[in-house]
Length: 293
Length: 287
Image 1: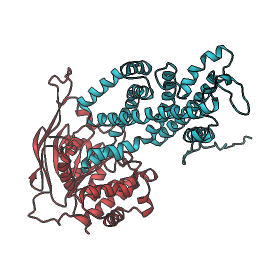
Image 2: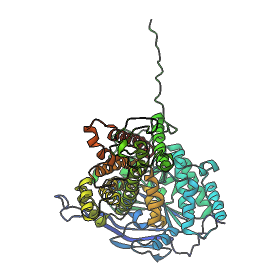
Image 3: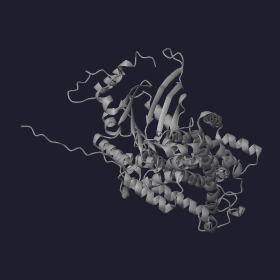
Image 4: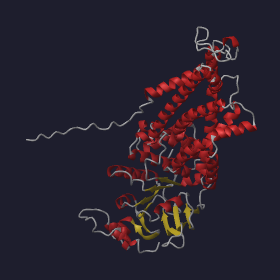
């Protein structure tokens, strides 16, 4: 049994995930500074995630990156624009169970909060087993074997698998969440700030694990992060979002080492490093006040 | 010369294992188990026929034949108390089981669907809150017929909003957890999420709430029976006995009302203590 049913990257294959002109407008109460009663959370966002590739969406809180993720997994409907999965347009919003199940086989998501994203009363084994039962027609023994395989893939030992998440650390829980995302054998995993809540050494372990899984399974990652170091470690391509729009896109190294857009430059400069002086670098959000939202 | 003493502060003990119910909690369980056993075995335990009237033996004190004496009609009090445990416990049990089943179904469905369904359900519950349980019982009895069934039906309606309100707010909190979103994305069906995840996580709270409700239901049912709207004499019931023993108190024979009241207090106290313990545990488990 393979870990993922995604076929190895072929040059002529359609991009596994593509967004074209995504736009999402929320209706909000009319206020003095927002007379239209509309909040443009995402505005004309386009990107392409090649099969087996990895793309980062970088931006600060409120830049619309999580809204993009919610639209991709079908929790939210774009106001305009298309989402293409394997070159085929995905439905506007996965409302029915069947639609959600079909989309789950394509796109999975790992959440930021490793404490809230697992049911605290459910053992790890039963958590993975439940997902397998939703997506595959396997016998009980096959499911047990598959659970063991998934646990092995993310580096969880048998004792942890039998236990409840309350007995696990944040990093171990995030491994469970990754195993759960992989259980459906998706083509794309969206990592929504998936390592942001972990401390640095555990972060490195989980990032290594993710890189390792990609090498072995040709899975694609869409990393949503504000952490530039994490982005550099995992993704070849990146797009930078600011106030709902893409301000810059390109190879990660180019964006991080030679940022073109002023916002990216400020974002880059605000990262603490050797010789960093608090307050010396302008805060990336300083521009927000003057800009129309 | 100064001596620096590093006093090692005792670290707060982290409750890693469940401290359990404690001696008081276990005593409460013991009392409840004993009362339940009595209710089940009452016909075999009772030394006399609880409805056997013998006016010659009226208002006797404790004796070898009548351990707790007799009431104004000469019926054996011990036998009546033992048999009375049945209706006195089955009544609240029915109220709790039915009110909890209906209340939590309404609450979870309403919390899950949200939107206008939730708004309508919440308004209906608000209206139900306005009905006092005992008043509703009077109404139901006026429409139907006095008896345990009518009293239970009235109290079920009166208790649904209390259970539904608590469960709904807890279900809303649970629904907002990211793991529910994760399950939704996976394509797990709403009934499965509601039963296997939301309900399973709310179980400690529901058990605690039901235990407390049992105590309240017992007092309310006893009150309804006392008013003559619930269990009908001559059936033995603690609430009825408090009521029928009243004239005897004036004649100087308080035992019937006294013993029945004591048993109600004992049972309600045990359920309240156990309910409090369960509540504490459910609050700990959600942290």
